[in-house]
Amino acid sequence: MNLSELRRETANFQARYRVLQQQQFTFVYALDNCRTDSYERTRPVRCIATVKEYMQRSHNATDKRAMRQWLDFLQDLDAFRRKLDAEGEMNGPLGQAMDKWKMLLNPSNDMSSLRVKYPHQEVNHLSCDEARNYYGGAVSLIPTILDVLGVVQSQVAMCCANGTWPPIKDKSFRASSAMNRRSQMEGELLGRSQSSMDKSVDTRDLRKSMGDMATKCKPKRYGGPKYDLGDTAFYRRTLNGRVDEIKLKPVKKVPWRGASKDNINHVEHRRFRDIKDRE
Image (cartoon, rainbow, N blue to C red; front, side, top):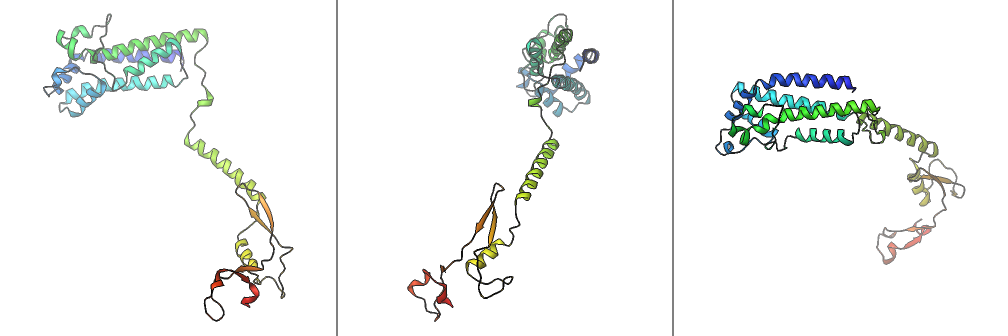
């Protein structure tokens, strides 16, 4: 955002507030009508959230319209502050003014002690009791924010004269969208899968083959009465993608866990016995 756009937006806000300023009596009267409970009439209007609560429970169309115009104006000021804050990191008096602007627009910020001074005349249009206790902060909030906006405009003009506006954005802390992060992750996973597939071997039938050879059973794809495992090599794929070569040796003894040939259980049926005893 350049300086001309900032000046144009500031002039638009000031023109809108001159129209809203003419309806100050209607706004104060709307707040007074919504304070129906007895304990509320002894307390000032403290924050923006309180005005929003009054608008939601009001049944008068004129009162709701007056409070809605006030809340919409504050919402537009907050949206403009976010747009200006997105230009980059601001330090010094400009950063302090932006922080004050943000604090004033906080829905839970206490504005009951806020009183705008000369050249503004909003507080003078109230009665003494209203200005001191009840509605002085509510009518002083928008003029105070517009004064802060004027300070921001002057500081931006000084930065433009010094050549330091717009501020440089820090790309290391730039927030990337979810779609960009997903595309980056998919690209990394695709590269990892291709590299692992180049180094790997199909191992779907290795478990069955190793089990058959360990028990010295003759597979169908091998012929001959004897089965030699000396020259047979297997490959296993580890978790890091590395491929290890394994050469198996024939197993002479296996655990015999069943019963004997005569279907009589004996004491040594869980020990290692020679395979020839089973044949």
